[in-house]
Length: 183
Image 1 (cartoon, rainbow, N blue to C red):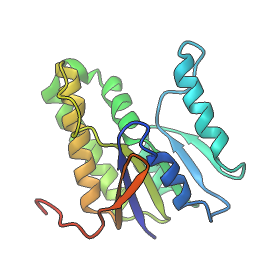
Image 2: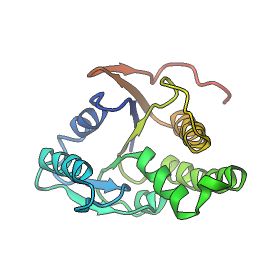
Image 3: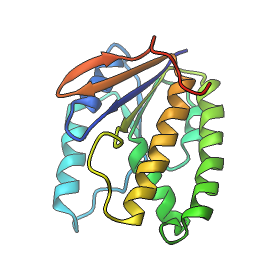
Image 4: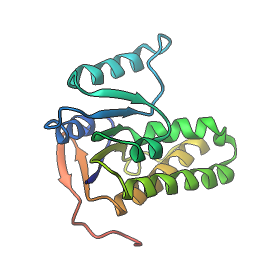
């Protein structure tokens, strides 16, 4: 079993690349930890629909925030898209935006559980995540909290992944053999 982390910026092609990695599998479980598409946000609904239209009909969708559980219980390859959405919903769920210290502690525990599941995955797992550390410095405390926590999450999973790729402007850079900092 292999674990692959695919990082990239918005509209970089990271989701398409992740889908290509699993294209030879008839059965794949697409794990969607983001908010469900609702009529109140037409742009989000269109993005969800676009992603669904690209996927083969044989792939099933699992909407869940329990990523560690989904990995542990997997019987088919998983594509998790995306960790940034999972983190946002996790922080929303614990009302962590107003208390960064407590939020960071809760996120660390959840990431530790995800890392443990990732290391012992019973099937191939590909996870998509945003690389937000290369952009504009957030102007709000909540933006800084998200950037920092997602950066730590990405570094944690990258350190224990079999493969790591960075997608920039539709180009894939293989980071798998790059040294890991701090391990």
